Length: 161
Image (cartoon, rainbow, N blue to C red; front, side, top):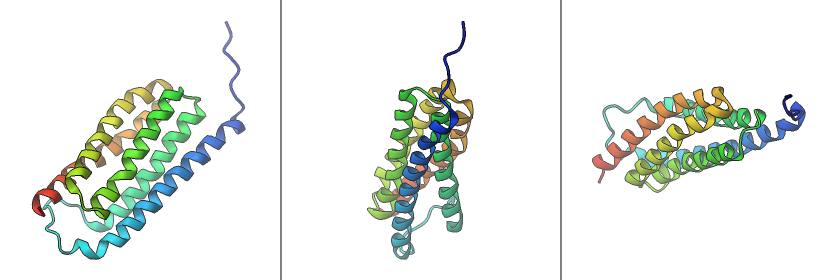
């Protein structure tokens, strides 16, 4: 039996563009929230394991681009709709952390959001593996950072309640 014909690669690029736009909008929103929150952060007690603040911006930029690349790979590999919707769920959870933590200063709720995001990533690893192994592997640095965000959010809440 022969394989079904694949879609021409030029028809698959709109998905990458849409994913990049969605992640870019989330990243810009999170950047604006972080900039507006910066003056008030000095009044908070900080966890001893917090990484230097200058590292957070580049890390979020790297992870935003990684999230867009994951979506692009899933789209390019013609992943199942379930995998694409799973990515959308991850984008929503990713987009909620900064407003909860930095904007509203609901640190415990931000920790819960990050924990949900981590569960979505772990399950997403297996969901994406079937369609694009590279997309699944790109979740690994995200999982490490999300674990850090859970601890950071929880500690901010504990120290400043």
